Image (cartoon, rainbow, N blue to C red; front, top):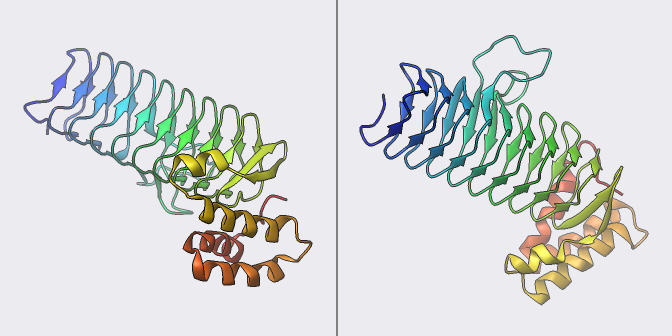
Length: 262
């Protein structure tokens, strides 16, 4: 079903069964398969491929050569009905790949709202990308990775499968992340290690000085106090009673399977 206000270039292929919303623009030589849904106001430029059971929200901009909903690269994948879900107002630049999920995990790959996925970024199967993130040129998010809201993964960085990058964290360019990056933390290197808090990102996102000082205290308890993580956690619990943002540190310590970067 194609809305009457949608503009489909004559050279584009939109299979019967695809749902194209109001005011969608589909550029030349783009290919959209039957189970795809495109929300209103989304612009899809030339030579884009959108396949599988993929749902894309409103007001996205998808640049040439992007591939969304293609079969994933997991050898266990056997053609099962798995999905890609993309939210609203994302910018998906040239040659970005977003692969469908696997039944061994969530059966879906999810990209939230207001994200910038730069040229040739790779979003592997079962990845969850939050909102307002920045995924840099040629960055790789391996299978099952989670990236929290307002986080950044810069150019040429690779996040190992099953790792977590916390909200407001920043992974510098050319980094290799093999363990979880706590929220708010600036990480860099191969293998990535912590370099304090992402102060620039915190200030840009409205964190005031008293809250930043509380987060710095939490960081020092984890990384500089000489305490075990269990001992540091007790101090974080006290801090979180006044500053709810500290709770993100505690939540990661309680749930991390790969351990945090050190």
